[in-house]
Length: 62
Image 1: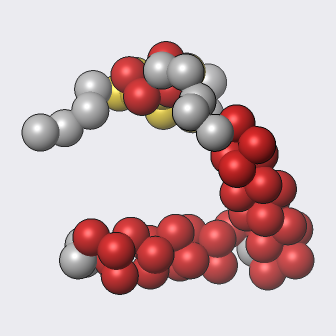
Image 2 (image 1 turned 90 degrees about the horizontal axis):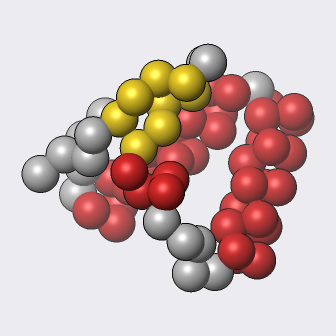
């Protein structure tokens, strides 16, 4: 099953973005951490960390 997405500006928006955030504080912490990685190590590093986390948790490739 895939989540439908649409492009808005430079961001892809999915149906998940329309759901209420069950833990807004944790989400804000994750966002701040990822923004710090982007600032200090670049967007490629942030993408790498997200992919690695997903791969380890869900056995995804990429």
